Length: 511
Image 1 (spheres, rainbow, N blue to C red):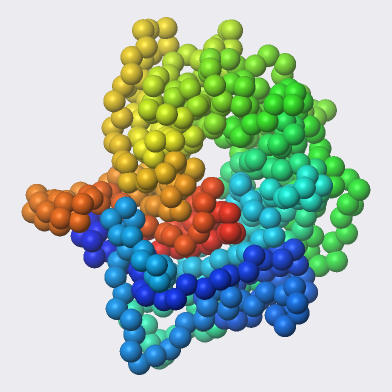
Image 2: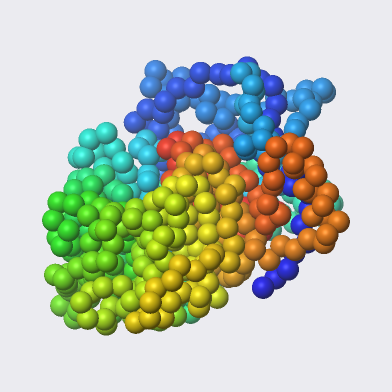
């Protein structure tokens, strides 16, 4: 693991700042505003749709959503805002400290998205140059069922919003695309989805084969409020964004390729594709778990998909999340509102878990993530606001009496339920989490401090009434009711988050 020295979090510029400002009433975006993309540096919006006239009655002025920065010779004194320690006064609002963001953009949507997934593209891995491009698939939670959609977004011209401190005009490289005066551009294609979308997951792809050949389908699964799980081929949507004049057959694309009816009318949230599909796209396996504690497996065959009838049944309450093992093709983990984490093997008879951690949390276990580099590490987040890291080597072996192991690390920084958690795709000690307390946090378990630093930190944080964990690298705020986060697998350090009020895409200097 990479070891990093820690700095004093009380002076960490990654924490958002607060400054006195009169609160402003902000309009709710109209239906015409879908697809608008904004950044903190421009008042212009671009999309593949017509730009909304800000003077029109139903239009929306970007300054009402993201007020322009007012230049003044006298700048207000900014103070690092630490959640749980500081409280905003009546006339105070949070403002981001853009000196610690390499890139920060936000996107408003007509309907909130509970879930999304990042699509692997053919633009290359370990991308560092700007402007950047990202492909995202997301499902909506609209006011009426017939208003819901499944959309593929192509977000391009994601430019840097902060230059390095030692940059100057003489050293600017126009070919590097770092100019700050460019607009981000949003293009999208959508298909109707006749129910609210609880979760979206796309089949994994191997880095060695970054994009499924055009001749093959590219599948995305959606967990619907109706209790159905739909599998869609989003290949035509992607091609229509990338290939000028591409003609896609809407009558075929607007219908799912396959629908899993195993859950009846019982809805759910837990869903994951097997990692083995990345190397063998013809052998897809999809797990889905519902609120009535049942987990079903759907596999692909030469003639299509096959939903198996017999469920996995060891949980006693709602299955909240599922993760296939990144190293063992028949093993998966699940977490539940019954406070437990269960480990399963699809080959086991009786469809029962082979081992588990019970209880893993003091309340509902909402989310889990399996480390892709260090395969024995699993992380979990619960309704209790706790984040726990588990060493699966300490879990009872199959067939032996089950004992509850102790987590190898535990954090209680969030003061609301954990809504999403995910290990970094390449750094095995780094993870991101989001909570119902409107925070997105970035962590590094490899952080170490000497005794003097620890003593100084303890004294200062105890005076403020709360200890800041040294492993906490960054706190991103500004979104309301954050639902899900993902690291971009091909843009190192880039994070995308979805919340009640839209999407954020950012990259910090901390990771």
